[in-house]
Image (cartoon, rainbow, N blue to C red; front, side, top):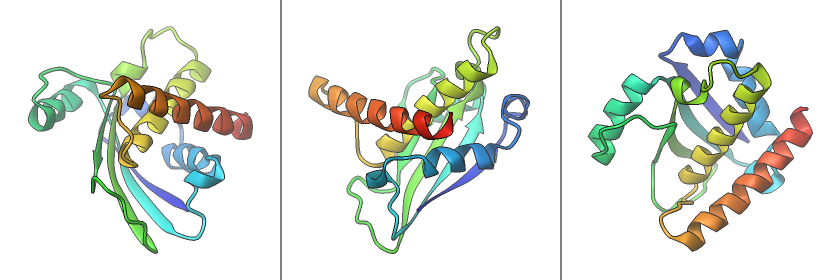
Length: 153
């Protein structure tokens, strides 16, 4: 079971997602079995942020002076699952996902789900530095997303 602790420092998130805790809980509960960790307690933190704050974090931790859609900070490079495993932290920028501003709620939710899955996979050790790793990660993202969409719609 995955527990997501959701924090928000950007008020605009609540205009698009009425209850962020329930939204992200639904996503995790719709993951394929291999990513549900059914007989374990797996947790992560999610900060719903904005371009200004994510840019500061990106500059401080990654030496990149620009905003981005998502940052993931895995607790460990190699995960050893035990009864209680903390995966790490994910930060998502509202401004990045809210483009174009004219997009409907469904498009916004779709982007949010995809970006969250991307960050989740980073916490599990996936990356996209090399081409082969990029395709492996993309395959997993697509698999999880299709599974989530089939359960949530």
